[in-house]
Image (tube, rainbow, N blue to C red):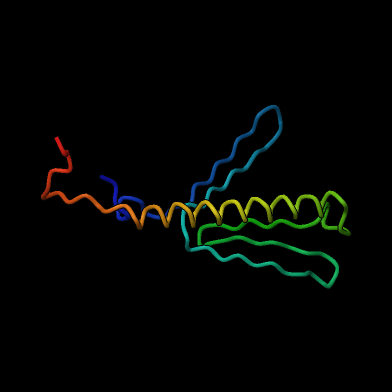
Length: 110
């Protein structure tokens, strides 16, 4: 049986180079993150997600003025974050209502 102790927080980083293109991947598997939205110099929004192990920053195209594509991306991020929140809340509630099995009893009704 898996317990919370079986799932320690971690951050996973990968880098690949294929046909001259570099791809970085950062996976945060921890609730110990900071999430900050700010406005840089009053002209450029920035979203930062980070931990002691790494940071992800998202800002406008080329660090310039806000484009329609930047607005679309911000909406996609907000929608995905809302779905993530909803799924976390759903699963957390479901896990809280399922009684944990005891190693001292046989859960098999047969």
